[in-house]
Each structure stands twice: as structure tokens, then as C-alpha cells.
Amino acid sequence: MAHITKRSVTWLKPKTETVPQPVSEDSKEQMRETSKLYTWKWAKLRQYYRSLHPLCERCESLGRIRPAALVHHRVPVKSGGGLLDVDNLEALCSDCHTIRHKELRGIGGSKVGEARHQ
Ligand SMILES: [Zn+2]
Ligand SMILES: [Zn+2]
Image (tube, rainbow, N blue to C red; front, side):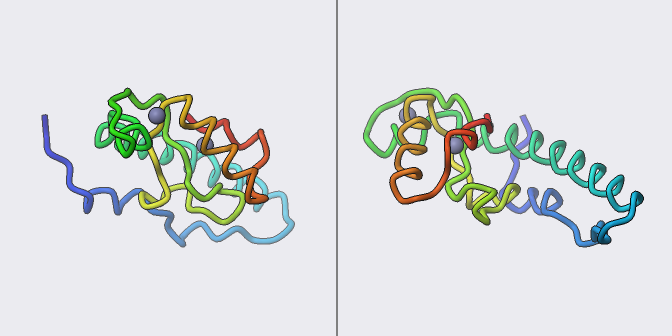
């Protein structure tokens, strides 16, 4: 298995080349393309991140070993967190994920719908 360094993820970062233009039909199409690209990059990044963090990071910090079920955004994307920002990611089991989102709601952050990333 090839060893992947943190540096190799830089190609996944958003590029400025697809700047959405306001209002025209063309730009709507472009935004759809951009979001498809983001979805694809996120799928790749999630796979990469889980390969680095196969265990739940919250459980690990509590001295437990449990497999991660999904990759969570520490700062919700809709609250300004980076979708493709490795520093904004956390591998969690489903129990810890539920707890994380309860914490987020507790500080006036995310609503239930945000728990969709896996
Ligand atoms: Zn956990
Ligand atoms: Zn989450």
C-alpha cells in the first residue's frame, strides 16, 4: 500500500478557476458543475481521511477503540467550515457523531439536517 502524506491532499483543495458568475443560465449550469466537482472531491477526501483515521477519534481520545462510521465536519460547512479542509474533519463512530451534533446544537450551531455527511 502506498504511503500517503498529508501534503498529497493539496490537489483536493478548491480551485479559484470556477468562479460563479451571478444570475445567467450559464452560471447556474456552472454552479451545478462546481457542486458536482465538490461532491466528487469530498468523496475522495472522505475516503482518504478514513484511510488515515480508521478509528473513531473521539473514542480514541477517551481511551476506547471503535471503528469510525463516518467523517464529520467539526465546523459545519453551512456555518463556514471547509468542506475539503482536512483540519475541519473528524472520523467518528455513529454514537460520537450523534453526540457531536448535540454539542453543536447546544452552542447554537447545526440543526439535524447537517448530520448527513458520512
Ligand atoms: Zn466514537
Ligand atoms: Zn457531523
